[in-house]
Length: 255
Image 1 (cartoon, rainbow, N blue to C red):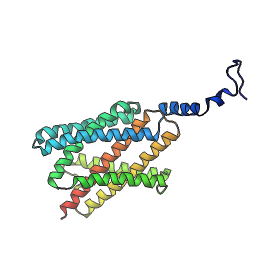
Image 2 (image 1 turned 180 degrees about the horizontal axis):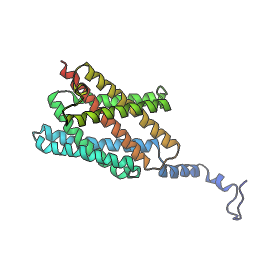
Image 3 (image 1 turned 180 degrees about the vertical axis):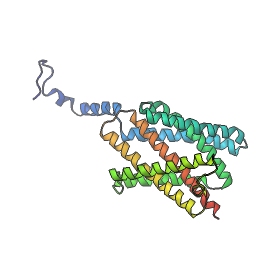
Image 4 (image 1 turned 135 degrees about the vertical axis):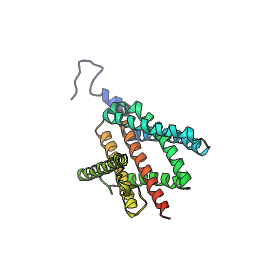
């Protein structure tokens, strides 16, 4: 039983507050803690920014001005990489830097997509469709319980992602010394098989992103983690899209 020396505050005070009080409390909680809907809205915003900047380098490339578009594309890749590192090490910077990352990656993806579209006409639209189709398909599977981010699942995906990153790093460094890992870039069966494996691992990283967002919302994580969750999804989607593009280009080379 709640007691107070103030006669205006008694047991019935909060009863009279009723549904309005409960709704107000919920609104105040949503204003200071992470929610799934807030993360979805911020993800949509970042996607719009990326698409907008991608249209710039895409239009310049197809408009006959690749000399203008390519510096923007390469600059976007460098800025996006640096910004991503900053956000990863300082999550509180996500509300400010996540939009910068989205714009920078959009510039890079627009230029890259345009160049590949010129080499392999009709490749970009299926890659975009495959990326978003994978996103919504895995989201449905996650929400229905078909896929669960168990500890073993997380460990396996983390290890596979780290292994892929190590292979790419060794190949990148090796290319400067004359011994790149050639098969991962080839259109042979091994190259295509490697790309398929990478696409699957990139896609399953989406499940880890979903789990992070869900866990953060359930635990009442700070509001800025909505931006971090949206940033994490963007990173995975960018990686997935690029790997699908690479896979489709390899398949075209085999024709």
